[in-house]
Length: 209
Ligand SMILES: [Zn+2]
Image (cartoon, rainbow, N blue to C red):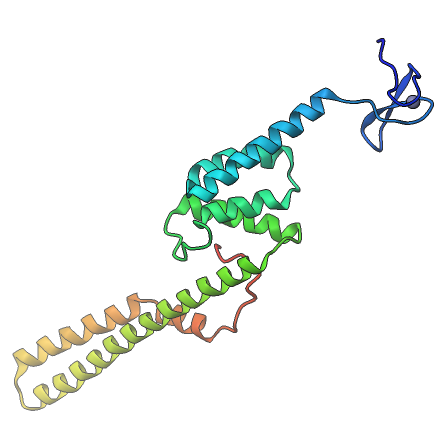
């Protein structure tokens, strides 16, 4: 090869393993690598395009563009932050009903924990998601209590009716009692109570699992 060093004019080079690049034998100046420059330019352009899609609210396109970048540069935190923003519709989708988006968001969140890149925006989002979840648990608890109350009423009524020998309505009330109990227990009361009693979580934890 007829390459010469841009700094000293020397024409022999060696590979520096620790820096993973070709260097001039006499002064150590790195050899320009057009392929690497090309790759960096491709990265910058793709990232910038993904950011435009994110700004425009094209969540899916953003994720599609960022995926290959994540496999080329797996430690770039900003890629995972951007994917998380896209998957959560810029942290506005608290329910996360779409399973594919939830999986994508969960993956990005885990990477950011691992790379020590959890942002304040993420913590705020985690708290919102937790509060929403708690609100739903509260509603479920109210429902369970209502069914238990109905069951208790049915059993008292059934007792009175049996006592006054009104057998047919008494049997109906017993049926009602069974139905109410079934309804109460099919709402997983133990699980709901356990979750309500659990301590306030660490918002850094992945909220999608
Ligand atoms: Zn040189």
